[in-house]
Length: 314
Image (cartoon, rainbow, N blue to C red; front, side, top):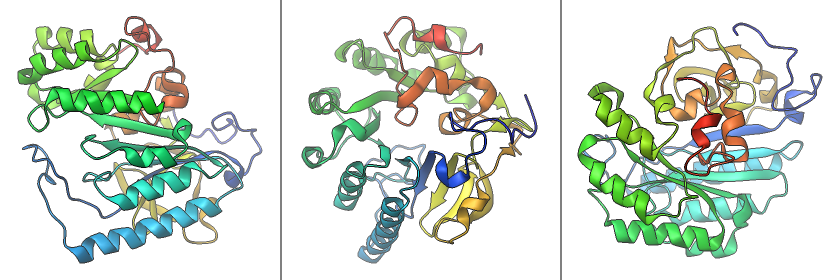
């Protein structure tokens, strides 16, 4: 399926709905780019920011939150996808808490290494919070990470847990899977440039039934995608792009006429290989796999054995 889809309902909305009446998902990535971990593959590892840089990030975050709180005409979903680690900063606790209490905000999710304190959840509407937690075996003891996962479960927070798929971490990944409840989805992010052996793929597939979907760079050129229509990427200045992987701006959310920019657009990239991108490609139908857990990467009917049956052919 390629080309325009201007008459197709978006996310269940009526065909004639205006952009402002449709649910909108915003992937927010402000200037925060510091992290307390030092993963060698990450350019932001062990990076520290000045007080002025943190203040700047805080100002832009506050402006975004106020915009989100005022955009009440349709449901809103917010996904924080920072370059660094957001939850070590209290301002992100406050932002997620405030957004979770807004009646029009359906979900507030974040990608995190889960190293930070979780007591802020006591003040949040946890039924609207989503956590995408990454286990880094070289930077945190398994026991501490699993205890954090238990705390999320005790709070009732919808969450997924995962790890980057380095073959040298197989033992740690095995221990992680064994330590978590079977109903907790454990995903594996494929490192595509490694050139996995079939044994590697078989192992990672045994942990993550959807691994082969992540292993593939999905053809996307000219394909219909929700990005730019019901899903956008927004930076700290309010500049909106259809997604994190296409740099062309489509507008600025702080402009009064911004909603006019929310239109169907075919993808201009040859392929899409990152979960937070390809999950919005129409032809993959991954919205049916993840349902309400789309942002925090939780399959709708995960049972540790049958979720792969819901997936499209790799």
